Length: 240
Image (cartoon, rainbow, N blue to C red):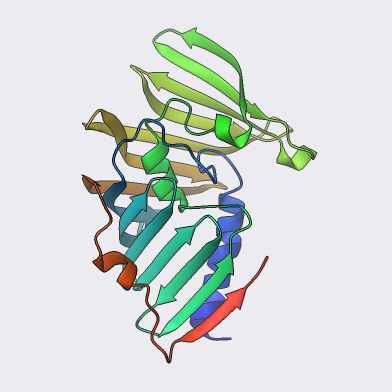
């Protein structure tokens, strides 16, 4: 197996654990959004070190196109039924089925759903079980019981002036499994977006800076064509 494919599967294993729950919910209803496509850029730092830089196009309810241009050129297309990871410089593509219906990687989901009323939790079966005011902070508690103990999660969402600034996720043993901080909110066409997101999990700090946000009526024709694979492309297909 090539170094690229091995690195990809290490990344995939990490992401499967990373995506289990919190604010990265697989299928989110973006009821407050009226634009068809959200375009933005993000710059990631993991433990203070430069991570990927990317441009993202997110079609509401449909598809995410993520164009990573540093450190490795990678084109990611995420749809509810299938995923495509394409490395044009190496002429390698990876197709996978999508049993969880994930249509966006975590930073994309965090960004586009952060300004919705319930962060998409209710559409994944979470129920708001409690809320309270603590000084100037509103704290909402969401729970997902799950069929098994390891599927249980509780999420406390902290808001001030209608903006979420922190979420804390707990497992069935009441242990904190993840903390997310959101900030630098901006208003574009009556929808709010967090321009900074910090994720603390397993002793790691993952930070994202967002920029150049645009709401587009339609996806540019040039974007889907970036995922047309050459005839001689090395294609790997996997099912889960």
